[in-house]
Length: 294
Image 1 (cartoon, rainbow, N blue to C red):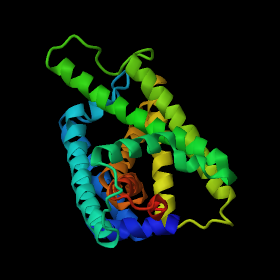
Image 2: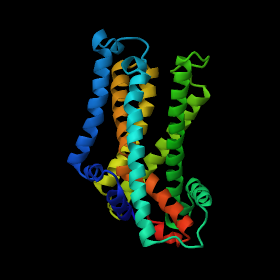
Image 3: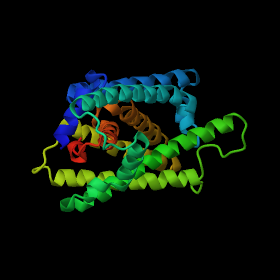
């Protein structure tokens, strides 16, 4: 199933050059070099005029190294780049499905298809059917809901930041530990870490039975280090370990960029292609088993 999913992503992804690069060691080096250079350049441009004062300033404040505006200038285009590529890839994918499996009269409406797919994804109904590995359902749900919570946290922090910038009376960042957004972020980080940790453990444990490609491991590793560096960023900031905090934050930003910008072309692309296939299976009235492994 993993091999089929990987081939689907590579075949339909746009541009395919990124997907092909994500399957090789040399290609991944290039993909990582892009955010490494972009983030480093932004840090230098921001701090070269003050002799990198953020390194010695107390307490540790990540915005001193790279303000939110700079972060947004890097990551918003990366997100738009990913969304555009996802749209192009899914359009090509659905076009292929329509040719091979034309819609029938038994299909659901588009709205009903989307609603049913969302319910299936959130309930992890397909994982529940896997009786031989029930724990996988738990770990995958923890990871999924954890990353969803982190996504919501990131956007909530961005909204609070700009509300503060425009004069609204809201809590500035860094947020206190018992702020609702901070609680959501910390709980989500723990959930994501537990989920990805046990997924990695099970993958290693079953490596003799199920051989994973570099394409698979890059996705798992990227998810793991994104979560771990995010958690460590808070630990080092609170403990006022400037060198560790800022270096970890830099690595975290690089990991997040890779995760977001290349999402449609890496293993993460299954969050686009699989729901698209599930929606089409309902909309077309075709046998859902046809698309189950995508």
